[in-house]
Image (tube, rainbow, N blue to C red; front, side, top):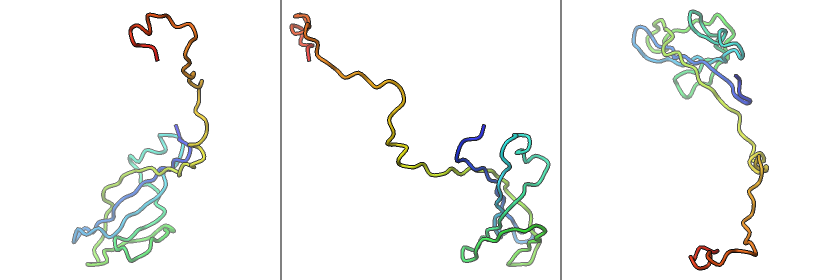
Length: 125
């Protein structure tokens, strides 16, 4: 069941086989809808962007067919630690100011005909 304002993503680290350094992260959206299509078992997910591990470099949009190499030693890279995560849209503050659902609580009222034993016990308010 999809939640309003929820977006599911998949991400994977790219790690060098020779030196073990993480060169960056691949990020892409998960298809919405059928859980069988969303399963990552046995197939590669579609990635949309590459974020280099170096914070000074901007993220790059992927067009398909890219080949990555280690920036330090030039070795081949593999996908490591594939995981999914979700993001949610911000909730407007106006929605929090709306009235609560359900019947409003009844205000406390003192009845005119309270028994005298209430006052004798000290329970009367």
